[in-house]
Image (cartoon, rainbow over all chains, first blue to last red; front, side):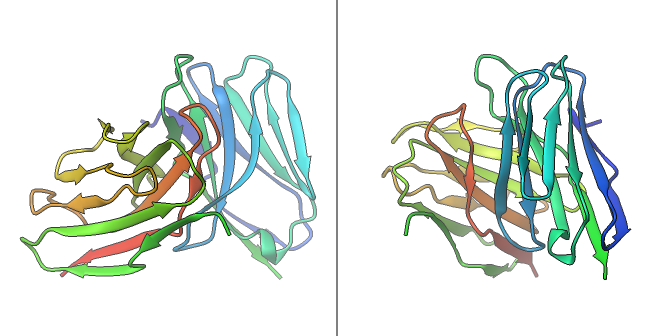
Length: 112
Length: 112
C-alpha cells in the first residue's frame, strides 16, 4: 500500500456539482502540497498547507489540513470542465526534510 | 521566462539501448529531482540532487543514472538494465529539499 492514499481514484461529476478529494497518511504530514496535472503534461502547483487546521482557497478550490496533520482534503465548488485532470497530493513524511511522497492521484472528469 | 524544460517530449527506444532525457532549469534552484509516473501509481522518485556534483538515489534508482555537472542541468540516463522503462518521466526543481517543487512538462519514453 502507498504511504499516501488518495480517494477516490477517479471521479466523474456533472458540471456545477461540488466534489471532494482526500489524501490520507498514517504518518504526520510535514508540508502537504496539492498539484493538478493535465494528461501527458507536468504538474501545476495549487496549494501548500503546513499547519494543522490550516485552510487555503484559490478561486473555487479549497484545501484543508486536519488538526492531526494526517489528512488533507481538496474541495471544488461548482465544478467546471476546466477543473478536469489528475489531482495529486505530495507530502513530506519526515520532519528531517524528506523528499516529497506522492499519492496515486485522483482522475477527475467533469461532464458538461 | 523562468522555468523547467524537458526534452524530448516523446522518445522511442529499442530494447538494449541507453537513452538520455534532458532537464534544464533557469530558476536558480539548488535541488533537482527525477520522477517516474505510471498509471495509477502517482510519482516515484528515481534520483535527486541538492547541489552540483552531488546526487542521491531515490526509491527506484536501479537501471537509471544521473549527473549534476551544472546547477541548471540534471540529465537522466535510462540504461538497458532498466527492465520496464516505458513510462512518463518528470523532472522537478526546488530552492531546497523542503520547498514547493516546480515541474517540467515531462518526457514520455516508449520501448519498442
